[in-house]
Amino acid sequence: MVSIVSHFQQLHSDVTVELHLSDAVADLLDGGWDLAVRFGERPDSSLVARPPAGTARPRFRGTPSRIAHVRPESGRRGVSAS
Image 1 (cartoon, rainbow, N blue to C red):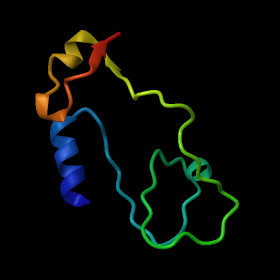
Image 2 (image 1 turned 90 degrees about the horizontal axis):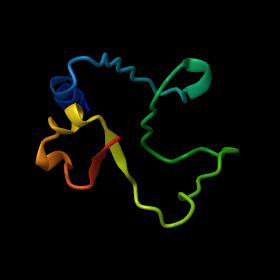
Image 3 (image 1 turned 180 degrees about the vertical axis):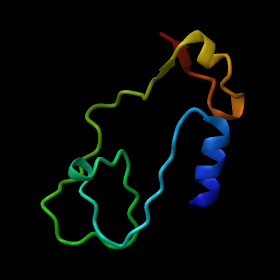
Image 4 (image 1 turned 120 degrees about the vertical axis):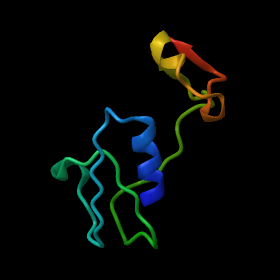
């Protein structure tokens, strides 16, 4: 995980990353978290996982100046400016 975050920070130096490790289940809304990565078995929960509706392909958008800096190995193909 640390190497992934480090690589992300090298690519996106303008973004602040805060990594919090805990064995507690975080409430994303109350905790102000943008992302949670959980490992292991999921306890009984009222949450329901569903696949995205339809067969729409994901589309990535960005400004022309941002897209100009996207490296081909990170997915330039299919990226359009908006």
